[in-house]
Length: 54
Image (cartoon, rainbow, N blue to C red; front, side, top):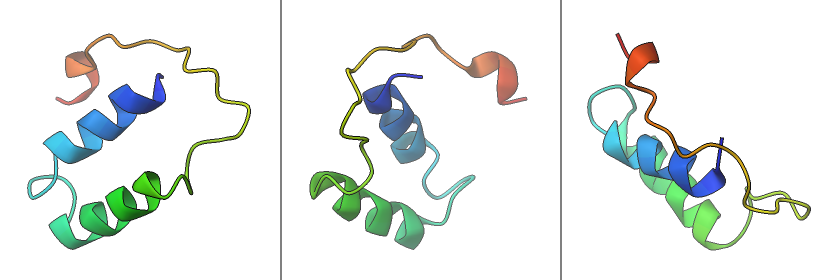
């Protein structure tokens, strides 16, 4: 999955499926570049994952 899409989904489920404090900590690390792999070219799907959220 595309990195930005994954981060978007994590933000979206903050407070419902994920603890907001954990999401906030994760997002701070994302902003610092701690989670994106150096060889990540930005490829991957940006499709909806509604089919697995049920």
